[in-house]
Length: 171
Image 1 (tube, rainbow, N blue to C red):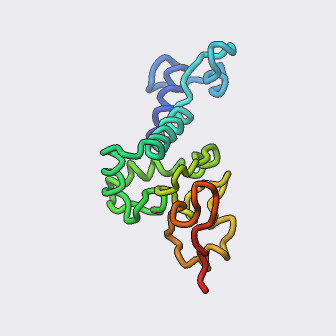
Image 2: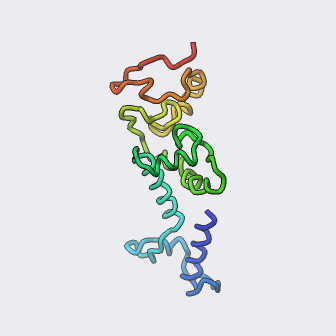
């Protein structure tokens, strides 16, 4: 976020003073400068919103492009688990910052996305957000803790018609 803040600072200084070095008293509030031209603003791109949108776009591509080489590369490079969605940390240090910045928008992203598990072969039963707004592990923590298969996929437990295949709790 530091880079985004620097870019916005440069934008503000340029708009208000015509250069990036001098700082003058602003004649217009910055939030009004970012209003679209259609709504009588200056139409300056809100770099923070733009950055979040681009990060969300990468998350969307990662979620929707199932058989892509770059997705396999990301999973191999940054994740210790079968799915990057289930990985709370990156494997590698500095290079992990790229994916860490993308996944920083993870919570916001999932508030606006619903997974259709299709066959369920790639959707974690407990850890993915395939019911609206929450993972089953968060919605039912005690049941999830008692599950005999905490890493099960939807396809392992539920058929396409919604029938349970097996009981998923410790006896």
